[in-house]
Each structure stands twice: as structure tokens, then as C-alpha cells.
Length: 174
Image (cartoon, rainbow, N blue to C red; front, side, top):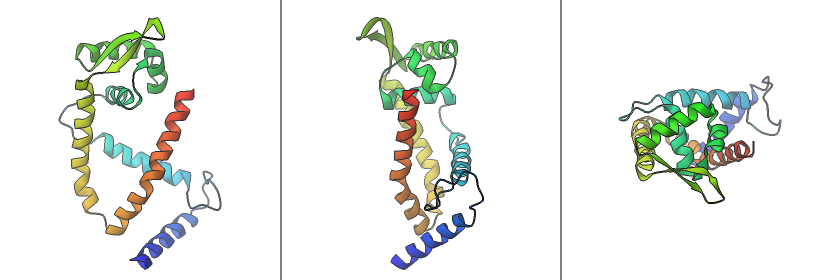
């Protein structure tokens, strides 16, 4: 097994080294071509966000619910920045989500004039159900990968999680 993993790593390294012509190369000492990485992530995201779902909600709605579920309550102005939509558009969305019982506005303890948007249990359940549903769709695809391919993906998960964390931190600072 150890030999197979080394062969797989060598194959992946050679494949990426052979594509050094990209202008998005991070470092000659690494095997990461950011252009290739971006294309793969975008291709996967196109598939992932279009998986059939039981409950049809817009991407923006799901993104707002996920932001609140993961990051906690936010002011409307913070959500405008992270979700990259206009203040009037987000105000309308939050009003609909509030009417549907998925979020609620509460006074900001730091500034009584402002409100914080909180996700409700119903909003949290939608996100969890969506994730479980997507997991069911991905399970049969993952089963079609070789054990070595699954190991490579499993080994990459901590780095991908860290990359997402860095990106989220950078977005929060803007």
C-alpha cells in the first residue's frame, strides 16, 4: 500500500509539474498550480450547487443561512459585505426569511439602535437537511473512486478546510 501511495503522489506531482506554463503557479517548490486548482473547484462547485434538492431555495438564501449558522448573528451591513449583494436586496431577503421563520432580528446589545440577524432552529434545520441531502447524492460518486483517490481527497480535507478558513477570515476583514 505504501508503494501505491508513493506512485500516486509521483503521478500527481508529474502531472502538475508538466503544466508549469500557467501564470498562476504558487511556488516552484510545490505541486500546486492555482489555475488548475481553481478550475477543479469551479467545476465541482457547478455540480455541487446544482444537485437536486427536496427544498428549493436560492443560492443567496442558503448562503445567508449558512453564514449565520457558522458565524453567528450578524448586522445587516456585515451580511451585505459577506454575501456581496445590495443593501436593499438583502433587506428584502431577510424580511422574507424572517416572515418564513428562518431568521429573527434582535437588538444589538452593543448598540440598541441596530439589530442583529439570528438564524432560528428552523433555518438551521434547512441547512443541515441540505447538507445531508447533498451527502446522499455524493455518496454514490465517492464510492466509484478508487481507494487511493478517496485517500488523497481525505488527506486534502484539512488543507481545504484551512484554505476556506483563511478566505472567510480575509472576507470578514474587508
